[in-house]
Length: 436
Image (cartoon, rainbow, N blue to C red; front, top):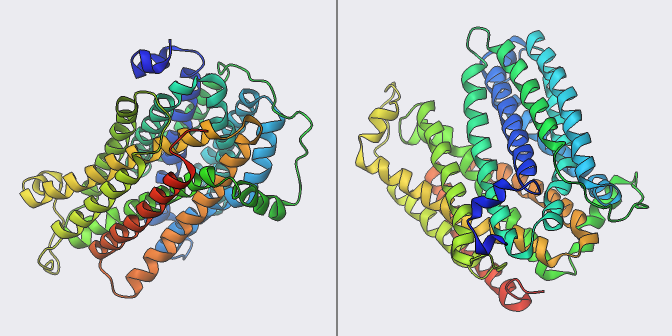
């Protein structure tokens, strides 16, 4: 029986989905567990000890993790087509165990350069895992299970991001934190490798596919090969826009909490929690709304919802300037102010609409793309996602340098997302709403 005829969570009781879900969840948790711990360690210990600017080094770390998506997405797509994708994921997960062993050593030595090298390898591991992960879903799920499956994957991913970020940041600076985090990342990686052993095998799409060493040419070819298929390319760009919006909001949470609302890091973590839960619930709601049908007809409306909620967030962020030297308030004091509840409501609305927005686009790509081109399209999406996230970081920096306040950046995103919604709507009308 398909997902449209039974509860969405029934997929979690099937071997064709549960091992993949757990492997993805553990991988996303470990990525963010490690990255959060490293960011805290750089900020409060390593940068000063090495005579480096912590703000610059944290941004360098973010770039180090993204760089492999530009370098290795092309060979990752070739390998996903050449080999059994389940086998490839097991190899990647085993590599993660080795890489996390290096991370444990780096934490004990408190060597910033070794830890940055590990971060690069983690980004490379994620790059090779992604095309296999998303392209294997249509091989194991029925057409009317794609919305449900992608919704569960997105929900699990954002819960993993939330919990990994929280635990990594909380543990690393505690007494014995270096040892606990080092052991933790190895244990989680080992658990992810173990769950990957149960992912059902698939037949190789093209056993004779050559893995090109010309990375630049092949990476450009990923985009040029997808571009003529405008319905798929529109979905790829729509997904990348989601990552740009999400990266923009997530990057502003700490400074927005402190400089605009006068709140501490616990409130910034609360923002992350609300944002993650909103995306998860929105992702889960897709299956109920679409009833298993692969369609992007509601994606423009979801984009408008993101835009309206972003504009409202700008509106409710108008506050009196903070008095110099005023201590930051915690979660309890923050929640006692009614206007701050409106902030949380706006963040939830943005992220809930984001879940409604992103899941149909992933499902549409999987439905509309022929099996022998699936890994290449996912790799193309990884490249454009990374590019859009870089644009987010650079654009936000330029806007702040130009004198805009953080709430005004939210308003800029609201305006730009309206334009994105118009373009998406035109793409839907011209190239169809999910049918082949």
